Image (cartoon, rainbow, N blue to C red; front, top):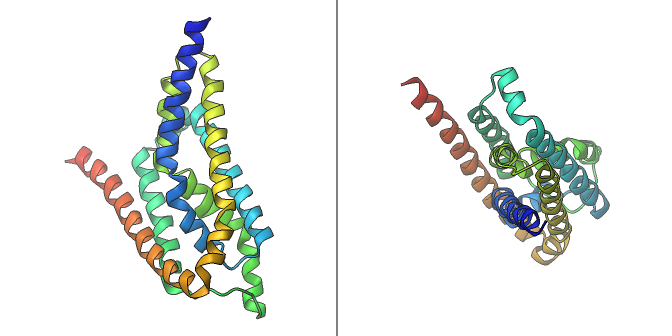
Length: 215
C-alpha cells in the first residue's frame, strides 16, 4: 500500500510541476489584466471563472481522449501550435493598437461588455491557459499514468493548477489599481508586442516540425 501511495505521490508531483511550468500562471497574469482591464471587477471574476472552466474541460478531454481525437481527425500538435500562434497574434495586435479606459461611457464602449464570454473562452481559456504545451503535456502525462487510479491523480493535479491560476487572476485587480491607467496603457503595448512575438514563435515551432517531416 505504501509503495502504491509513493508512486501516486511521485506521479502527482510530476503532473503538478509539468503543468505549472507550461501553464505559467505568473507569466500570463499581466496578459489577463490587460485583456480584462475595461471590465468591472465582477466581470473580471466571471471571465476568470469561465476561462478556468474552459481550460479545465479542455485539459481533461485531452488527458482522457486527446490521442484518440488526434488519430481520428488526423490532427497534429503542430497544427495546435500554429492555431495558438494565430490567436495570440490577433490578441497581441489588438492590445498594441487599442486604447484602454477605466469606464465605458459611449454605446460603442458599452457594447464591448458583450464580448466578455468570447474572450473568456478564447484567448484566455484557450490558448492562454490551455495552450499547445499544456494540452500536449496532458496527453503525455495520461500516457505515463502508472495505473487506473493515476488518472484521478492527473485530474486532481489539473484542478490544483487551475485553482492556483484563478486566485492569481483574482489578484490582478490589485495590480491594475497600483499601476494606474497610464501604466496599464504602457504595459498593454509592451505585452501586446510580447504576445505577438510568442505567437510568431509558436508558428515557427509548428512550421519547422512540419517542414522537417516534408523535407
